[in-house]
Image: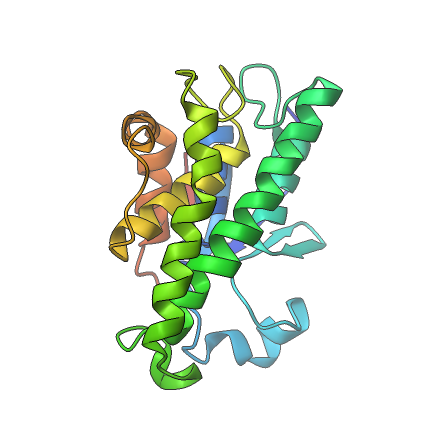
Length: 226
């Protein structure tokens, strides 16, 4: 495994910020947390905007390098700091391609096209900001359940993880969406329940969830040891 020179993760408290916290735990990495949240004004400071002009969380700093977008951060961490027994990306070329397919499917069809649309237009979420639209929320929920059939088919053969016997970052992305869907009352397919229970029993999952909820002020970074 490569040696991490200095890792700082910005962002806590969302279904997307938990992903890199979880990946850090799975990879056994030590890092600093800057516990800022979205829509708090903390992402719009001059300091943070210089690091991430998109003014979004999460953001990872690895020395002088910075990268945003939760799925990209997880993939970067997996590629850079994974190793024997801690690899979150398949080595085989065909399996690697299938891993990419799952990652892109999850972040586009399940996350941004379905769950985030629900969040943006729900009265008890971001609807007051972006517009309350019950019909849009209902349709997004239907679309999520429709797309989840692909997960149902993949898990129907009794595989332990999306990629078979190997836990990968695709499982991190999927689990956060399943957790999100349950919280929103959307419901998930039957064979996703035992899958979710297996994933949630992982020490990395529990550590990542705990780190994601740390109420540490941005001015007082705290080191996290997985």
